[in-house]
Length: 409
Picture 1 (tube, rainbow, N blue to C red):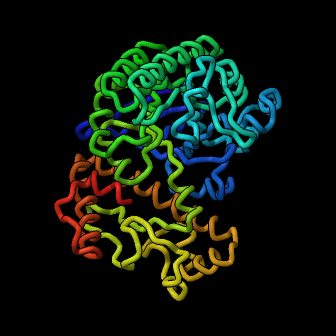
Picture 2 (picture 1 turned 90 degrees about the vertical axis):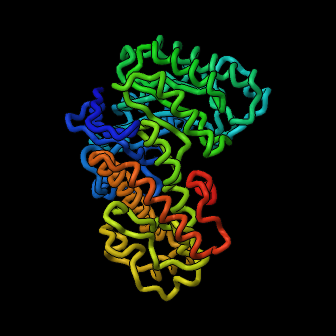
Picture 3 (picture 1 turned 180 degrees about the horizontal axis):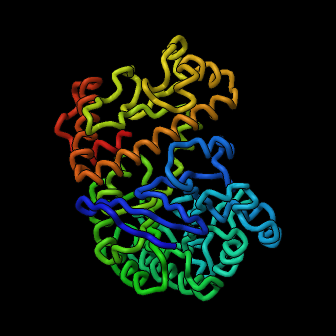
């Protein structure tokens, strides 16, 4: 694996990442498409290939999803996740994050391994178990086990999570047959700047190729997050990539990019699609594009609910001038119909658009950094959002902090 930073605008940066066996890099900051056991929930292999992303598509996989599937021996005999999923040209990034934010103390206190929620109930995963799965999957990048805790835990529990995560990193490195060629060291520390720094400094000393920043999006406020992120970045070498979990909203992504994050692991598109929601916010903000005026007072600024009856007779595409397959061939009215008769095609068409749109958002971010106008991009994004909120809700404060207003999304 090789990573090169080509452009910087403050802490925000654009780089190229060569991962796995691919000789073609992909640009960062990048969205890792969320998958269910290898594929996005509603996108087939051919649809992934049609997405507007230069280079190999980076996909995120949770090794925990494979605990109840084929055994590690079977997956390994097939040739790993690339062969199993028939996605040889994609880049798989593996990391495990529990679906429950706060574990019972009796579960969290187990020092032998991490506890994860699976379809068959809660399961303890030891470093040896985890490395057996990683070895069989053969992902291009993988993160070490992390004890991620919410911001509300005690100082003692937070310190224990850092100690445990560092110990598990040593265990994973000792069991890694590749000698640490593809590993990202996990960094935790809750809402404590001191613990975050301690963890980051220790992980930076290890033989890792990059960094996985966990435990964010678990109760910390938008206002305190930049301080936490910057305290971590101050301890990390600039020549290695950084991945983060838990930052999903566009405002949160901008926060992460502003602090120097390169890879974003997120289920945002998946959950939007399940809810019948479509992204509609502008992408060409630096060129003066304004927030979508084809909204109703019940709509949020970044997305619309296509289940609503107001779209029953709406013959326009989800977003005018969008080049995705859905917007080029179907209307809001048709997707509204599919959603309300519970036809799975609705989710397929929505995920095509939402994925296409969010990848476009990341592309716009990279272009803004390249020309040194990332700060202007952020300012216009938040100003447009506040102006539209004020037009629908005149009592809202036009001078509200953009990071505070992000919580209303």
